[in-house]
Image (cartoon, rainbow, N blue to C red; front, side, top):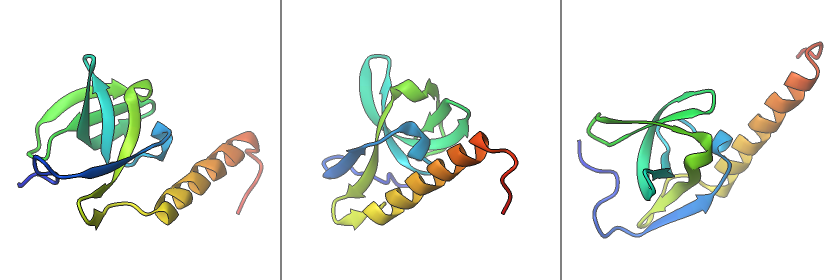
Length: 105
């Protein structure tokens, strides 16, 4: 597999809450006092599995160590503002549903 981001590529990272991140996103995360872009490969509660693009799992990190999401590499847009807004709405819906378990569709 080739890297999604080549050395020297310009990237655009937006600060976001970790609950907006999804598997296959590229996240900006703190690992052992260093900051890296990593592929998000699994989410379990507030734990996020980060890996490289070759299938190697680097390990798990907590939500507090996820600081942003890569939305653009060079000219290629990975996530639009509309995509992020849709995710925000989904998170808000889940919060509302958890407040009122009697609510049904």
